[in-house]
Length: 636
Image 1 (cartoon, rainbow, N blue to C red):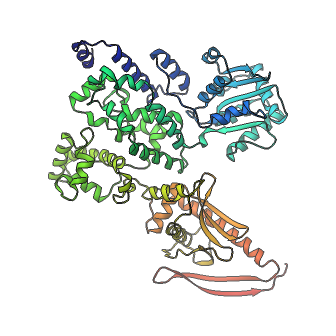
Image 2 (image 1 turned 135 degrees about the vertical axis):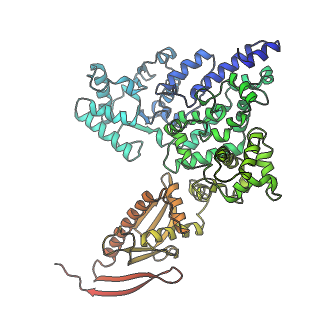
Image 3 (image 1 turned 90 degrees about the vertical axis):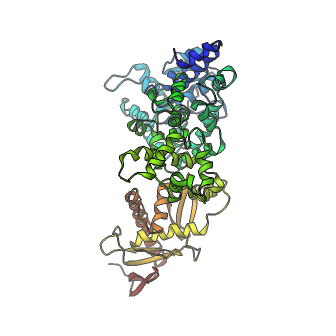
């Protein structure tokens, strides 16, 4: 019997409320980063919810209305839901089935293929898990399966008002299935269509009776907005934090589960976490629903000393007694700090968040605050606010002892390792505690490897993203141009009013380009301009050489950080190679565009050969000596 149960009986209270709360905690753990969080997740949690007598965590998917409209409004279409595991494909199918008045018992059968008759008399075929329905590799096709997919393939290109399909499949499995089908013109045409839609990120094709929803292209931040509300407002939490359970260690004032749940509701922490997930979106890193829920569960229940690194109700009394409450810090759990390294790396959301190096990056001011703040009159107000007043995850007795030992001991003392680990956790905590109005003063984003991330999000993405509020500040554009110039030319150029194009006698990809080709004015002039625009789903640096000639360089977070760092004189080796090659590729496209402009300008005139050697003056501005040779335009 647990310590909590003993206290419960001693108090003479009925255990019913406590048992219900325990069941909820055990159930919600199944959404967490545990081995049971597998490919059969929808069915697995559904059965677990029935057993526990609770409702699963559920919310309306952002694409649900669009999917349902394909079967209920105007011209009906078949639908493919694709994406990575955990994107909510099966759950979307269940909601469509429910909306179309499908038999609940049929859905609960967990058969991979089910169907129903629509009000129009047509048949809706639902394959809610293509990988579970098709034969395994090396096995032959069942005639009924082959016929059904061939019917679907034909119906894409030949109008068919008798059969409509809703198919959920991981993108790799989708292509592989049509590759394994017996060859026919319709099957080949369908596979080519799927590949095109995936590669070109399209959701439809003219003349094809299909909507293609790639859920991996959706916004992780938007999914988080829905998931966090569904998670926090689930009635299961009321079983824990209302009534007589609040007098027990598991759910009382000293419970880390309760404290983490309350902290997750605070607007600042939620906004800061959302910012990180939105930056993942703009870094081309998609986080599916399943992993967002795993993140939320780990945030509330994480503790490195518990089974699967997640707490249950009966763990809390022991954690309080042993004084390890601080190890349940939500600030550490959000980055997966409670998990083993190999487990953290294997789960996308924690892998992606770990790339920010939050806790491992710092500033002198922040570390002075953490180490000497209690004794420094200037830093003491910050110390009290961020550490001293936090009785759960701030400067507890263990922290103060380790802090004192660190200050008084020699640098090489191995006993300092424990304090250095505590510093990592406290840096993470400060990142989630610094108010927005103090973010610039305390250099919030210097606590991550992406120092320009806050600027990128606030002054670029949110300025340009439709409906948009205006233009990006000129100084930001100039900095990016200066970074481009330094990479394209290969020298410490300070000029940011013109984008300089240079080559080498060896190749356009040479590290130093001393042959001047041309320059494009940043300020609009004679059809030339350089600007930051919104292109598709992210910002892009667009260079216009003439009214009909332009090239764009998509600005994900890494590229933005890279160009900004280079402009300041640094070349961060941690992510410079790929970005460097991307910029050289962009340079090559600009030189091709330049040749196109020259061809149009001199189509009927003379060919001008220009040899111009670049050098930098004492201020870092490029200079070039021009030698031009005019030749008559003649065919050879």
